[in-house]
Picture 1 (cartoon, rainbow, N blue to C red):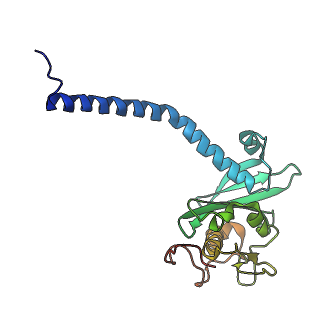
Picture 2 (picture 1 turned 90 degrees about the vertical axis):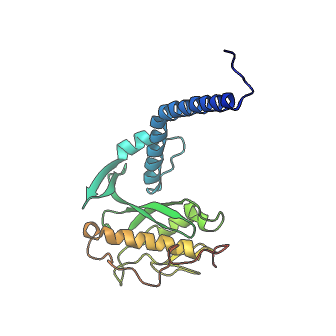
Picture 3 (picture 1 turned 135 degrees about the vertical axis):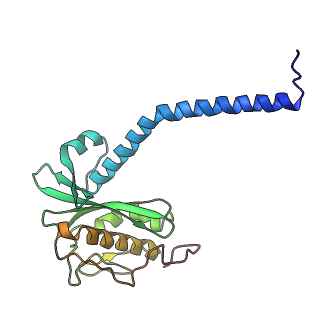
Length: 224
């Protein structure tokens, strides 16, 4: 029996076969690429951890450098990293996650052996405004935390402020107050979670005035 290629049945069968074939091909490709994708994600994480140590990773094998310098450990079920630098000094690196103005923010903070002095930081974001909140990824913002201390008069010392910063304060990004405060809240909440590991000086409560993306209604642009 000759198949009628102009019939609706033929069109439906033909379309179904094509869809099934394409779906199978996509599944095979996705499966074959998954290990490489996972490896890339893991490599990116390692680069972020290393970046909190103020290292220039250009031209370096990040995988090899991570294996040489970093040890992954846990405290109360929470991950942290111990870095042993070339000069023999140790740094404790704390991972953190929070909320900016438009979405997730995250980062790593490296502390000196006293678990109080900030050695370096790394921050990133999912969807903050380029040129405003997106500036948390820049070294000029991240290095503002260097040599500040996490233990202060009120139990916490990481305070990000508009305008000129004094003492242990960190200057916020101009025009990105909400994102900057999101970074502040992320840091202080994380330090509170690691309080037993870091010591009694770290706060267990965060000031109510601190705002995050969850408490601020989104606007068309970052607040000044």
